[in-house]
Length: 298
Image (cartoon, rainbow, N blue to C red):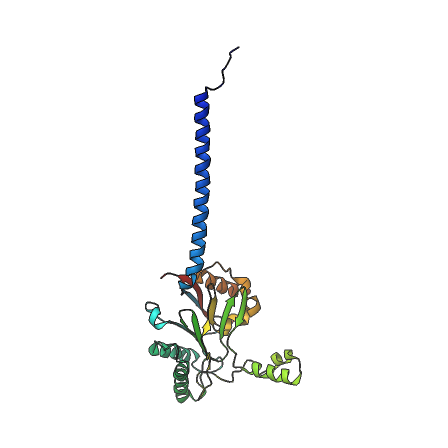
């Protein structure tokens, strides 16, 4: 049997010193890490508002069961957004009338020609849309027309303009909200039902329900617009779309088709395939510009 002596005193003292030094280094590391984490968190909170909201943009433009694609989209150039802002528009040619695709394209082409728009001149921008509508009236005399929804985003704010029954939808905190009032008979009939204490469900049974009471192509049209810019927030999603989207996916189910960590391209793809998978036998053309607001130093 071997007899092992205990460690010599100097070796033991060396181990103790090494352990103490290791403990001191570990505590220092923890303190430095916590300090860095706290300082970073404070800096991010302090400077978050200094980060600019930028637009992540995608779109889809699909033909449904119609013979022609009567939707038209416009997306403004994005290379000078700090000065001009960002504009997105959707125009849907009115079904049952002539030259829907020609008129809707004329609307978006005209907006392209008029760009850039003055962000704080809502009345002037509304007058531009009215002039476009009057020119269509002079050409077709109510035998052709289109809807229009348009948003203008500048920094953290948005203005919008609307004629007809297309959509401007804000998705925030897992809730989808229609920002514009649809200018169709069902809206007017619902208002009358509420005033008369009648069940609003009857409004949708009226044969005139989807008929438009105002549109691009009407003489001296009444353009809906924001009187004050609308404040946007990080991760807001804005859809500028034709009614072919919400005819198939109702507003209250729209959020079920997207994930909020997706970028604009992923959201556009998810909504498009959500409409396709429903296989609506009367599917209207469905188009949308999808905008997701992100914060960036750029």
